[in-house]
Length: 497
Image (tube, rainbow, N blue to C red; front, top):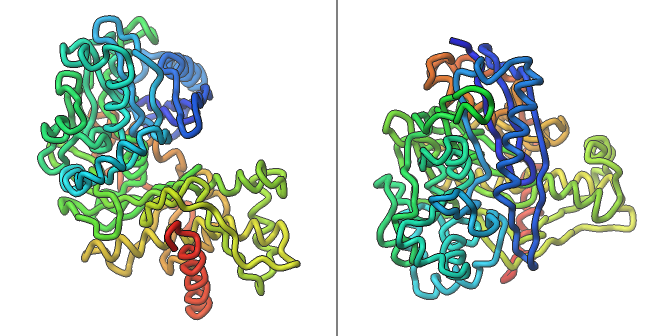
């Protein structure tokens, strides 16, 4: 059997398809952006049909780029933007309205109302999540309440709910498979992560009929077969995981205590806690890292809303740089005597603060502060926020020791300066892998290993290769002073600070 494995990476702003060969090297790629829809302030939507079209076109691009056909593909893996909600008609497959994206804040007042009823503890106990518009459940509840006739149709079993993976699998299989995986289910506010099942109590609170929910499978499982008419041959769908969990798998973070962080528009850090479902006391999320062969591995997750977006702000908002790549050289030139702190709370602060009302601020400006100092502050903000997450994780989990090594991926990791400063401020080594396509690689490994054409977990871990390790090289007094300044800046930025 061919060793080619296809991965669909359906992201927030674009869809990518990547063909990996039998040696797990990238053989072909396709990418296409799609429309971001903003009906009102704080609302974000996607057209599910446009996402579907982008998937079909990028897969065809990747196959052409690799010089192969669908007949050469042994298996398909899917990874996706998490928490985004699609509802469609069971009979026709037509969405009843645009998808509501994870970034959407329209259910903020609904979440506040649930909190006033003292329900957040119940949701957190069962799902590991907080009551925030970020997650799927309140978005689905809003859709059922605001699309005419939707709740009655859902109760009759006429409507299907899914995150993006479920919607794509439904379309790819011609409506034959109505499924999701445990990682995507764990982000919905409706899935009990201890019992690994949809939770009736939470469904009742959110007024969501169980009839519209998909079957939940392991991350490596039989999710159905792609209809041969779509790409020219039938392809088994054998792996599915939400994007951050797929990146965790792609980084081979299979052992408890292993930690990965992805640096894109935002930043998401996941710490593998093994079979230990750690209940965070520091406002981190408890989530499913992956479920394989019926065994669930858990993680602590910290979400940073603004990472690379801070650099985009320097470019597009302030116009003080022409391209993101300039920040690396500028940061190196920054005046070391100036301690400028940027707290990038442009859309509030994520973990461990979860302060939606906080707004961005800059501290330490002088007459000599310029583009170099702003660049350094933007890059350091990512490092400081990661340190906050690591501190919270170490407080939450007794087995998280001082020998942590952080595996990193995402666009920002190309900056050597940023990765060195990250190691310095974490006081821990930072490993950058050879293959940076870790999200797609994780989905591909799930499918390829299930198909028997790629190595098992141990074999995959053994083939993970490091491009470079960044060792901490900062004086402890300097680190302590800088971290103290950061904590002061955050404290003054919090809405109740």
